Image (cartoon, rainbow, N blue to C red; front, side, top):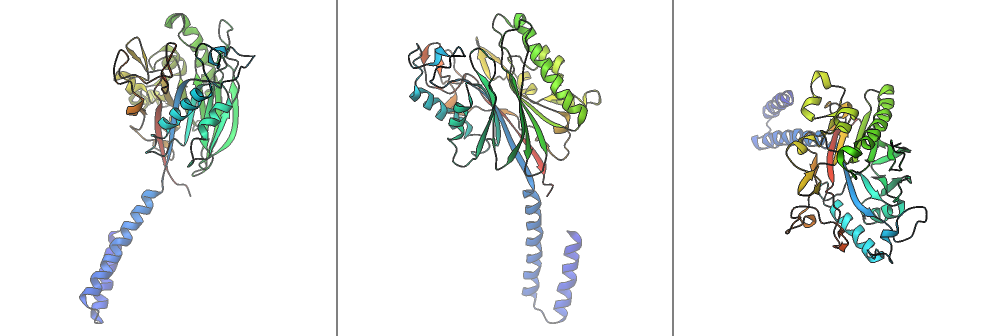
Length: 366
């Protein structure tokens, strides 16, 4: 920019020698400064952002009986009286929270857990007039019929492939598949590997049920290793409700997801980075259990998304999404997310989990 100003000064002198008055010279100088500012604005606008979120939406069932699943609890004639108006209200509530994200634009791509089928996911997608959302879903063998899904805006991303990764548990009970979706980011051409997880619960005790989550972690680790063996620079985003916290064995040891500061060290430069780790250390959480906050909902990324090259995580952008209207204001569960039910009592809230979100940025390759 400096050399342009020098050239302009020379031009001003030449024009002055020809009789150009001082005012015209000033206008010419201002024109150059504005041009330089415009160049800077254009350069800044080339920074491209991708907003990613994940949310356990707590029992998003339709109102129809699936005879192959144990979904009787969520039917119109059941004790909960789960009918269409209740389902419609829940869908609208979920969309209301999603619309607060990404400066009011909603996520570009987001993973969902605890959805019964692709139909209820489409109901959510239909709530967004400014988005062209597409649902990725595969039916899981989970006995209750709850699955994972990924929803993306096809104006921003293209589908490459979708697969369900089965999780075989030590006791051979049925659980959710891991949903694996490859999407192409139109702005840059990057292929991003998304894994949406909902690992087995802690029912029966955390330690007693831990082998089940370790089994899920081993399966996920196997799949990510396949990808990285072919492309060490693969961009992988792992998200979901892990029913374990960042420091638990399944995540920190088996999957090998480390704290952000540790991932920068030489010894951990090939490790996955757990974006939720710092929030966990600070005592934050997404799920309140017996007055104890649990950081069950997390987002984990491969080294290529933490290297500040091309397409990368925007440092400090990971956060727990807590719009004020979603938070219980008083009582025993003050500060927790308003759920759909409190025990058997219908509350008409959102979910018993808070969502999590993060932003990824890059410079345009165009």
